[in-house]
Structure formats: C-alpha cells, structure tokens
Length: 224
Image (cartoon, rainbow, N blue to C red; front, side, top):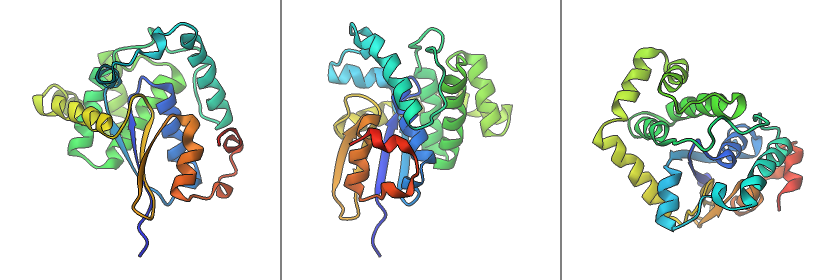
C-alpha cells in the first residue's frame, strides 16, 4: 500500500499567515487524503533561537503584513478581521501552552477543536483570546464545558506542559523553521522537505503530488 503524504504544520495563534495556512489545510479538498498533524510552538521562542527580527519591528514590513494577510485571506476565502486584533501582537505564551498541553495529552481532534475556536475568536472575530477570561470562555465552548477548560488551563501551568512547548519549538527549529507557518512534508516516496509561508503552499502541493484540480478555489492561481 502506498503511504499517505504527510504534513506537520507548526503554528502559533499570533501569526495571521499560520492561521490562513491552517484554514486552507482544514478546508480545501486538495488535502483530504493527506495525514496532517498540527503542532503548537511559541513563535517568540523560535525567533530568538534564529536571532530573527519579528516582522512587526521591521520598517515597511510592519505595514506590508497587514496588506498581505488580507490579500491571502481574500484569495482563499479565509474569514479574517479587516483591522488587526487589539493590542497586536499579544503575548500568546499562555495560549500556546494550553495548546501544547492538549497536543501532549489528547488526540489531534481535540487540538483541532481548540484551534478552530481560538483562531475564529482571534482572527475572524477579533476577540482578545490572550486575556484569561476570554481564553477560558473559548476553551469551554470548544472542549465541552468549563470543567474541561479549567483542566487544560491548570495543566498549562505545569513544568511538563511548559517543557512540551519548548520541545515543540526546538523541534520546529531543528527541522529548519525560522518563521511561521512552517510545513514539514513527506511525500509518498518517503522524501521529506520543509516549506515556509502560506505563499509557498503551491510548492507543498507539488512536492506531495496533490491535484489542485479537485479544489475549485481560485486562490491557487495566486501560488506557484
């Protein structure tokens, strides 16, 4: 039996481009036969490991980011707020620790449920998910109630979960990541390569041997 192509998508909720990549992988039929794993990391930690300057602190690029995120959202019909969420960029370390705890102890379906809700709240609605009360509310709605939310919030404060996020970030770095979204892809031949950026999804599709014709999304005309 020919193995399925695989993608590991490393992400942080602070990145609009990681959100767009996540939304496309979750919803475009091109990826329906791909084994996809979503792994939360801390983008700030990755940037430090790379000695990389955050884009928001680079003159002109800070303005370009807002334009570019809207271009890609429009191209692929990704719901996104027109204005940046309040107090952008927030410290997402508490959010990412929660996600790392879910990823470490539960199934990918639970990770996806949490990511769906958090991304929608932050990037589609503009809610401050980094605020404790808002984070708890979003988690409760996606994980089955306040008790489940409190459980993952409590776990996120443990040394084990904090270390899990560090390890995830270190793994992304070891696989070549210097920004997000980062895709580590393995095709049916067993070959593995890394790709950076939602604008390189066309290369991801080509490397994995996927058929863009099944999509029907005009956004694929925007990528190589």
